[in-house]
Picture 1 (cartoon, helix red, strand yellow):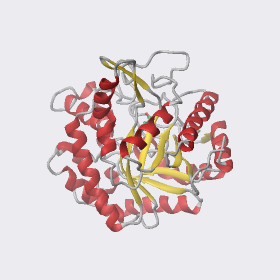
Picture 2 (spheres, rainbow, N blue to C red):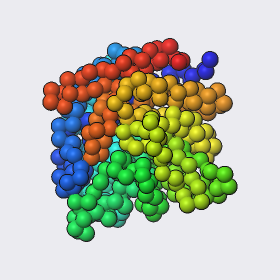
Picture 3 (cartoon, rainbow, N blue to C red):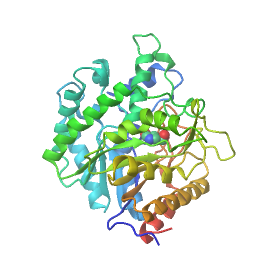
Picture 4 (cartoon, rainbow, N blue to C red):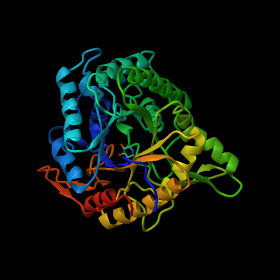
Length: 400
Ligand code: IFM
């Protein structure tokens, strides 16, 4: 039987914009209201008010960790103007999680920016890093006792979004063309390459706030990377290296010196002489158009472990967009099998956090449901799915 590290985290993840609701000051909120192709996040799952109920469901099921985010647009609604009430709100979330026996894993940036930051030029403005530092410095005051902090979620996807932002800006007159970065066209043809210049800037931002967090908190600090689990078709190993550098390795290299690396993996894709091969369509294709590939997690953790030279891994997201909860259990069973095999082979994995706790707002769409808990969007009533009880049972036993 696979031996897990003592205190292995078993949990689920969410992100503020996707569950809280009414993230009025953020750039994604503004974008949703400009682009007719995007559905609105609106009240989302109203987790801003119902977080205690969400956490209790996870804890009662047997999980031991909850990854959630702090929303910069709420903490700093205008440059330099820090909301004490919002800091207190997120402190209450941290304390509620701990009171319920859930280890809080706190993300400081999950795709969304304050709208003023975006208007100032966003991540490519000269002031970007200084701005991010001011926000993170303010947040350090509420992180007492927090053991896990993720500075930034999926900087490689964020870099794709920065590129889309340039392309579809209000200035270019194309703001209406914005599509969901994770759904529309993400699978076929393929998500575009992130701009490496933007990626390097995000790496600098990560290092700048890592220093602040290490100085003012006791938390383990890392960032979380979208891991595409790329594999080469015969004869295309060199092409794989080239493509993987731009999409993944640049971000893994920036994790050097971190306490952990968050691995986020859903599927797997081949690389041929032309680059990334679009996901093939099949009966198991997920609601985001990606292939059913629970083995991707094994490919990813092994690659991350090798590339970073042994930075401890925390699975901060893994899951499937499906309306069929049996398929979710099947996928997760297989994924955990691949993860356990990697642990057996010596990869240091500190926990598994499923994406997602709730059916939530998938960046422009409500259709793709990733949740262990369904949410009625009229009444906000939570309906735990069988997969929640199942994962809680795996957590209690520590094996499949
Ligand atoms: O919903 C997203 C999340 O915000 C970041 N990682 C991938 C998830 C599924 O697409």
